[in-house]
Image (cartoon, rainbow, N blue to C red):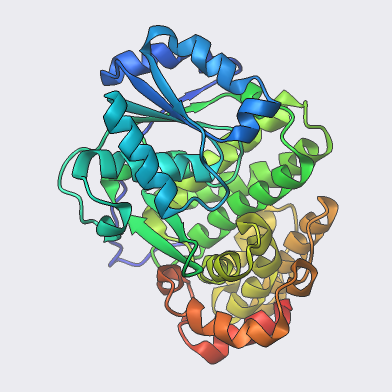
Length: 388
């Protein structure tokens, strides 16, 4: 689509991306580039106990490995970040290597702040509050979804309050992303599916954001094409390195896309469902995405025509709402093919809590970037009910 004469945007993407089968072996070289002599590996027990990925990381780092912090859990929390930063200071670590999914990468991003700025991660919540370079950080994603390895966002769960804290700052974008398909081999099919739809949601919401721009558009549409082509293959065969690599690239470029545009209503809803009811973020996105597309379609139909095309659906000649319906059905069909649940009731979200979820969603920062106005409780509640 054409842009108006008043188009104004900025894009900042400083991450060095290293892609290829086996490139995790280059970690020491990447540490040298950043001046990291004593690296802390930030990861989780599952990767240590069930895979050889951390052993490979240890071998690659050699004498540059200082210590391993393996306390990361899904939906990383305040205490995990603060404890990890405390250990890094005690050990004299001068850089972080996050190995894992979005929670590991976000944990390391938060630790980078606390190591440099002091205090607790709670003290730094907000947008663009940092004033100096943070602790060097290399990310090694083992899932293909969040795009956190190139994004300026952190999501941290306050487990006591059942809320998610949000951070946004250019200075927390990782310095380097190591995209190695071999470290994602054997990822469970359900996790592959959910994280893949997370990446798809990033791309679609970036393309339909109020902040959309030509650079992000190209990245977003390419990510959608890659996901439509390769996600089912990655889910079906966990050892397919080609599919795994294409999904790593898709998640990465979708992350670059939404880095400059923000996301939208799907994420505002999914953040709340995850915080209040423990639903995996990618699964929550998968359930909500078709219904948000339908909600947006009357105003964003022309954009969803491009989305439908990238998903392999011909929507030419259809009106806006029917175009949105075609895109929504394509997403729902993809969800079904990779065995993700279609409804909120299927993931134990109680119908009685939908009103409270809607109330919380309109306070989520993602909602302001939705391409159609959505910051109204009754509007959001309607979408939740449709998704239920």
